[in-house]
Amino acid sequence: DTGVSQDPRHKITKRGQNVTFRCDPISEHNRLYWYRQTLGQGPEFLTYFQNEAQLEKSRLLSDRFSAERPKGSFSTLEIQRTEQGDSAMYLCASSLTRQLMNTEAFFGQGTRLTVV
Amino acid sequence: KQEVTQIPAALSVPEGENLVLNCSFTDSAIYNLQWFRQDPGKGLTSLLLIQSSQREQTSGRLNASLDKSSGRSTLYIAASQPGDSATYLCARTSGTYKYIFGTGTRLKVLA
Image 1 (spheres, each protein chain N blue to C red):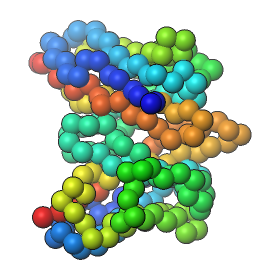
Image 2 (image 1 turned 90 degrees about the vertical axis):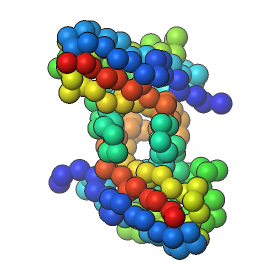
Image 3 (image 1 turned 60 degrees about the vertical axis):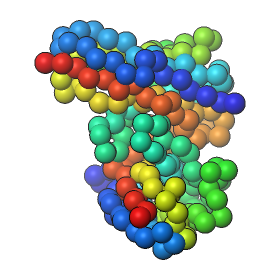
Image 4 (image 1 turned 45 degrees about the vertical axis):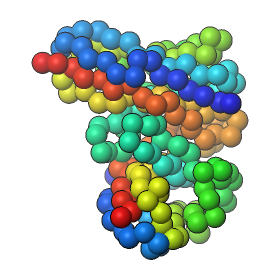
């Protein structure tokens, strides 16, 4: 296992189009997180999953955003009717939680979205 | 509001200097404090994780400490090298397990 994998690495789309990103976490990790990062800022939390259950969503996640983790393995993040303000780096991370202890989180290389 | 603050925002030092990056947080009920490195246009690379029962962690030239009572963590980099140039981010987790990040410190080490 080579770590957290994200696809695509870059996406350019026209305003109003839908886009979908994929994240493959480290195989034994039960937690999966999505973050968004704009230039010069730290990553902002969007949502996270424990196995297939989506446990928390940020208020940043408007109804145009939806995330799934259907079998508790890979996850997808879809943005509908993209807007220029959606342009950002979308980061995925995974970690292993055992007995209420959260271990080290590992991040993927991100998907850079540009909405034109 | 649960905030994480990093000071300084940017730092430029000559090669070989020892340096300290600071991270402060408002919620003392943290579970983990993790330091990351980010190169331009790339994802985050984990450097050190300090769990709530620990006070520090070391890896090579890096040492991170955690003082929950004062709401601070520091990342110490010994004998800095040009290859250390990057943005350094700290993040904490609390009861919800999500990571809350600071805005980072942009480090430039001059050869």
